[in-house]
Length: 372
Image (tube, rainbow, N blue to C red; front, side, top):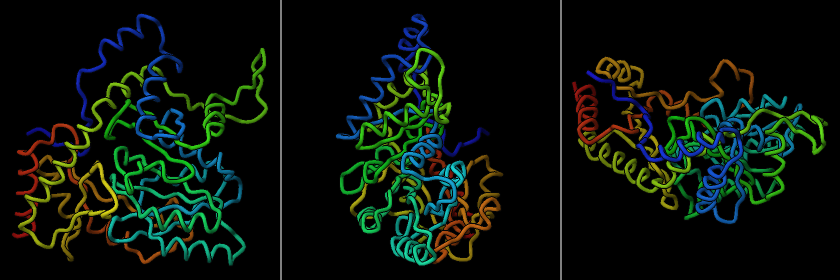
């Protein structure tokens, strides 16, 4: 029995000749035409924005926070229901994350909780230096309200759209709705470069500064001179070959993920108490991962163990950051919706190789488990 993986990449053989070309030309550093071609392809999606490629989505978050002016002792409001990479770069800069809870429709940052957090931190004399909102599993947060709050209080808004390439809010791509946007091309994402990420901004000077910082902040001198501390966050030409070829079929990959989501919804409709991560009518989701909410009284842990015994790689919804030992002392604002989502939420196999037969098998097992 072969393992049905959670988020295996949708890869094909395209790009092999491009690899041969750059290997023959010995162009394996961080410069080359496929870097430019990949950026051009992304720019066709993120029109009127400027894009820099970096070694990971996490690196891109770190750079965005630095460019937003976050520093030692500052506070950053961060969505609690997310992967730890959304929060850790706050600590890299010596700042402190303050976690904000989710709403139950999209499972993303709750505007009411955000407003409460801002007002209370200001009351305590600690106006936040940035807001980090995440579009988890490719479903957009409620961006109109979040943007309005950020603008009212003049706080930079950073979108972690690592999981949301191909998703939109009111037809605007996720990642282009804040002051900075972040993409990830990790091996499990909707397109992959093996590893890598992107930073999106409307300001070309900020992208240029990010690229400067990502190459060790080397001064324009005839020798190796450094006036400020930089990082080793360059994006490789080999990675760009993969990304350029992958993004040509982005629409097809998104449509495939949506079909998988609809197959799950149809097959699981016989259990009326199962809910799906729906999102908003104003949004379009790439359905990177299909996530469900199990009936009350059913723990995701129990079903996970059962599916694992059948060689099916499902996963919990993210454990909220305010419950992580790493951030046990961090402030939190919200109604603890994300704690319920963590307890009853489950991510189902949605990546490459998950066909209709696999989905039917998974759903049959889930139904049998819930109705036994």
